[in-house]
Length: 88
Image: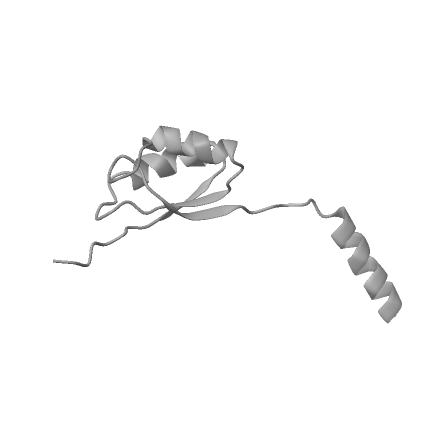
C-alpha cells in the first residue's frame, strides 16, 4: 500500500505544472527617487519575468494603487510598502 501511495504521489508531482515565483521586494517609482513611472516599472518587471513586486517608495504610498492596477493586468502581484525616513 505504501509503495502505491509513493508512486501515486510521484505521478501527481510529475503531472503538476511547473510554476516559478520571481520576487523583487524593493522597487521605487518617480513618486520618490525612482526613475520609472508605475507603467514603466510594471513593463520592466514583466519583461524580467517577475511575478511579485513590492513598491517601496520613500515616505509615500502614492504610486501603489496605480502600480497594482497595472500589474494585475500583467499577472504580477504587488505588495504595498513604504521606506520610511528615520532621520531628523
